[in-house]
Image 1 (cartoon, one colour):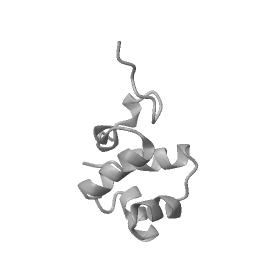
Image 2 (cartoon, rainbow, N blue to C red; image 1 turned 135 degrees about the vertical axis):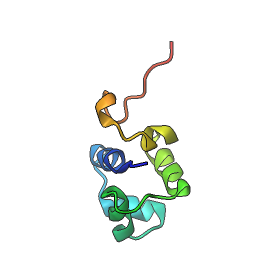
Image 3 (cartoon, rainbow, N blue to C red; image 1 turned 90 degrees about the vertical axis):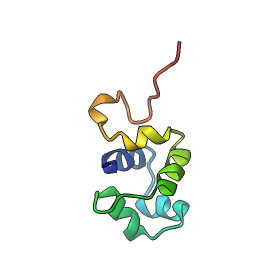
Length: 79
């Protein structure tokens, strides 16, 4: 369940530093870097908080196939 590409892209597109996101999550910057680099899988609670932080769905973050996404936070419209 790699999601490191998505969380890194979301952070960069929103112009946040790793330290700022880590502070929001209540974790160390070093731990956040491990999530972003795919060294450690974030727990469900962290993924949920990231989804809330970036205003995206939980599955948007865990589905790490960015090539299938128009833009990192372009949510498809429901007709």
